[in-house]
Every structure is written in C-alpha cells, then in structure tokens.
Amino acid sequence: MFESLSERLEKSFKILKGEGRISEINIAETLKDVRRALLDADVNFKIAKQFTDTVKAKALGQEVLNSVNPSQMMVKIVHDELAQLMGGDQTDINIKINPAIILIAGLQGSGKTTFSGKLAKWVKSKRSKNPLLAACDIYRPAAIEQLKIIGEQTEIPVYIEDGNKNPVQIAKNAVREARKNGNDVIIIDTAGRLAVDEEMMREISSIKDAVNPHEILFVVDSMTGQDAVNTAKEFNDRLDFDGVVLTKLDGDTRGGAALSIRSVVNKPIKFVSSGEKMDAIDLFYPVRMADRILGMGDIVTLVEKAQEQYNIEEARKLQKKIAKDQFDFNDFINQIQQIKKMGNVKDLMAMIPGVGKTVKDLDIDDNAFKGIEAIIRSMTPDERSMPALLNGSRRKRIASGSGTSVQEVNKLVKQFDETRKMMKMVTKSGGNASKLLGRK
Image 1 (cartoon, rainbow, N blue to C red):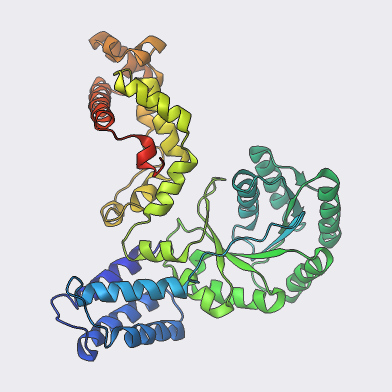
Image 2 (cartoon, rainbow, N blue to C red):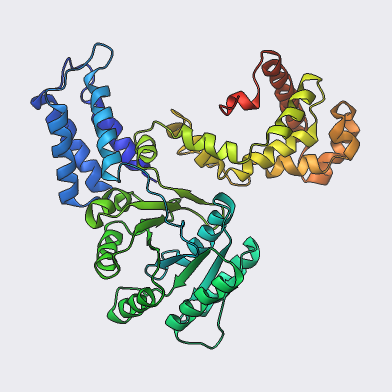
C-alpha cells in the first residue's frame, strides 16, 4: 500500500534540494507535485487542496536550521500533516464495559466476516477477553459457515440460530447467551449488500437499537478508494459509527481511503487488516503510517511484533547455547518459526527504515523458508543436534528426502555456520536478544 504515493512524494521533495531557504517560488512546484500525488492516490480533490494549502502556510517563513535543508524541512511538515490528516493520535477500541457489544457494519465483500474473526482473536490474545461471535448475516449462507470455521480455528464460540431469519432477534439472543456464559465481548457480524440500500440501513439500524452497542465499527475495503469514503459517509449519517476498519491493505490499493476517510466522516481509523490469516490485524497509528508513506519505515511496530514472540527464558537458554557453541539446527528452525509468526516477510522488511524501496519490486514469497524447513526436517535428530555429522553421503540423502539439490543443502549448511559464528561474536561482545528488543 502507498508505494506509488511514496515514490511521487519523494520526487516532489527533490525539487527543493540545493535551495538555501523555502520561498513561495520554489515551494510552488513542489506542492503542485504533492497535490498531483495525492489525487493519483485517489484522495478527494478538496482534501488534497486543503492539505497542500496547510503545508504551504506552515512552510513559508520557516527558518531552516543549519543542520536541516529545505527538502528535509518539507518532509517533516508533510509528515506531520499526513499524520494529522489520518487522525493524529491512535484511538483505542471501547471494550471496558462487561459485556462489551461490538457491531460490525459494511458492504458485502468488504471483509466484515473475516475481520470479525480477527477482532475476536485479537481481543482474546491481546486484551485477555472471552469473546463470543454472533452470526447475524442471514442472507449469505457462506457467511455463517465461514464464521463457524473461523470460530473452530480460533477456538472462539460462535452463536448461530439455524432457521431464524430475524437478525435483530438473533443479535438480542446472542447478547443474552453471552451474559449467561460469561463472555465479556460480543462481536456481531451483520449482513452487507453490494450497494447501500434502504432495507439494509433499516436492518442495521434496528440491530443497533435492539442491542445498544458500545462500539460500532465500519469495515471498508481500502481497494475501493474514494467510493469507500462515500459509502462511509452514508453509513455514518445513519449509524453514527465509532471507528473505521480498513481491510485488504495488502492489495493493489493507492491509499486514498486511508488519507481521506477521517476528514469526511470525522471518525478515527481504529484497525487495519490484510490477508486471510487471523493474526493479520493491527491497531492503526497515524504517525507510523505517515512514517511508512514517506519511506521512514516503521521500526516501532517491527519491535512490537518481535516482542510479542519474545520469551525471556527461551532467549536466555539460547544465549547460553550460543556462548558454548551449541547452537544447532533445532534452534535454527525454532528461530525461523518465530519470524514467520511475526507476519509477511516482505512487509516486515519494509518496516526497516531505508529498506522499503529496495524490497518493493522483489518477489518475496510467504513460503520463503519452505525449502530451508524441508532440508532441516529431512535430517535425523542426531544430525540436527550435531551439524558436524553432515558429511557428503548424509547431505545427498537429505537433498533427496527434501526434494532439493546437494548444492542447496551445502548452501544452507554454509549459511548456518556463518550465522552461528556471527551470533557467537555478538554474544561475546555483550549483545543479546533482550537488548535488541529494548529490554533490561
């Protein structure tokens, strides 16, 4: 997401390079380029104009410090305004009430049902809640089945009433069931349509009136661009929702919805979601998103993802093994599993400042580690724990068993040896996982 916008903005800032100060003359062309970049990203015309007018007002007359050139100053101003445009501060979800009722709304195909499952897993794992999913989309049979499958995958109960065609009654009964069973969060998945219609609005309004939700989230497909913003306005006029969820951020989206929606409906973006995996959900941080748009990476989110998978006791054991030169293939594959849990490899790399541009055209498969795992799993337990045993005949057998070549096995063994040496050097110099993650 935002790749095209990032490139266009970077080119815009280059116009000011070499200038001694920001003036109305040299800023005009830069801002013209910035406005074009926003319009190409499908940002509303009025919002794009208002944005560049604000940037211009803040930039003119700014004294450029000795250590900062006009181009860098412009990047900072645009960064701050982008963050402000998307909401400024991160806004949390309201689940302090017990039970907290969350109503999910949106058009058909926006990803409501998948997001409902992701949110249920998120409140369970991140906020230690005991959620219940309520299947109130009675028009799309696949929606109920989909929610049922998600519930089984995430081990979260799903309230279903087979044969009941009254979604308002189902929602009310689901709340009653949650109170009876001690569920402290109820997530109600509602029906969508291919377009906004009166029947749809009347039904979702009736559910809202019946259950009095503490949080209404509007789910929008970010790939629909400006249309998503228009739809959000219609829903907000009727429902007065509390926050927006942007889905399908991994698709070919230009980012107009993320940049425009806050200004149009005056409601915060609370979550972003990508892909079908139940872990692919994040709180929305406007400042961090502005960082990513301007190619500054998102190191804070990267560290948070690492900390989620970080186990202090396991790290200490691993450090002792490395110090004694006992790091083996079992440890190696465990580290790979930790990285995979953090998310898509390409997305993770893009969070590192300065790396985003270098990986954008690379085809990094989600299964990038598949070959490595196949090779390690084709080793015997002794070979994994004692890599020195891997002679020529053993490597040939491993290649055959893993569907790879001897050359690939040799390459992995060489990479493993180099990794082990590097990790030992880091350990000797006093570095450890705790320090890398900012822990004492």
